[in-house]
Image (cartoon, rainbow, N blue to C red):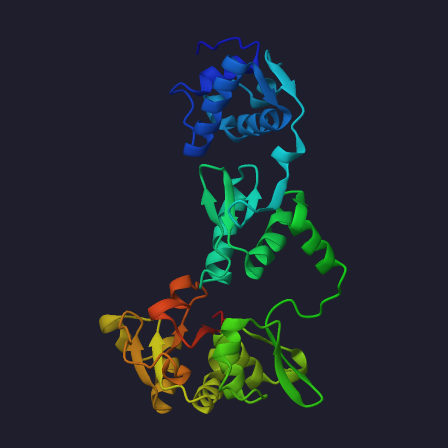
Length: 358
C-alpha cells in the first residue's frame, strides 16, 4: 500500500476530504470548514484543534486501513496559527435581547447537547411552554420570556458547558440561587391539614379551579395527569397512593389483582393493550403473562382495546374516561403521553418470578 508521508495536519485534512475516509454528515461539514480556515484564514482555535484530534481517533480504523496510525497523526504539527479559543465560543451564554424581547442561548456545536436539549423539551414540556427555537440567522436559540424555558436552560446547559449568564438573566439567576427553595416544580403539599399546589402557574391554576385537593387516589391521579408532583408527606409510602400519583408505573404480574382494584377505585374504564401484546391469533394464547393479565382485566370488567384502536369518544374534561395503557416492555414514546392519543396512566407489566432451571 502506497501511503503519503504527512508532515502537517493540513495534509491530513485534505486526505480526509477524499473518498479514502468516509465521514459522517456533521464531521464532513466540520472538516470542510477546517479546510477553509487553514487554507484561507490560516488560523484556527485551540477548540477546533482539539476537536480535530478527537476525530482522528474516532476514524482510527479507517486510517489504519489506509496505513496510518491515529496516534502518529495527532502528533503532527499545524502549519497555520493556532490561537486560544475565546470563552464566548466555548461557554454556553444565556442572555436577554431587548431588541426582540427574547431569552437567548449561544453554545458551541455539540451533538450530544442538541439531542438532549430537544428530548427534554419534548418530554418535559410537551405543551411548548419551554420552546427554545434555533435562529439560524443569528446562530442562537431563542425563547419567549418563560419561567420554564429558563429552568430548562439552567438544568441542561451545565451538563455540557461552562454556563455564563448575562445582564438581567444573571440578576435573576443570582437571586434564585441565593434563595433556598424546597420545591422547584409544581407540587401538591399539605400544611396544617390544608392541601395546596406550590410553584403553580396560570394554566394549572385554571385547571385546578374545580378540583378538591386532598390525599385521595382520585385527586392524586389528577395530579399525575397534570404533571404535578406529590410531596412524600402525603403519600407516606402507601402503595395505592404512590400508584395513583405516578403517571408511569411498573407493576409486577403477581400484583395484578391489587392494581386492578386501584384502577377501579379511580374509576378507570378503558384499557389499551400496548407494546408487547400479542396480536391476531397470538392474542388467544392460553398461558403466559399476557394471558394472566388479560384474564384479570376481563374479570374486573374493564373494556379492552388494542393500542392501535384510537379512542376518540372521551370528554377532554373528564380524566376518568381516558384510557390507561398497559404494556409489556419499558419503552415509552412521547406520543403515548400527550395529544389526542394520550393516556390517563401508563402501566408497565414486570415479571419478578424466579426462572426455574430443569
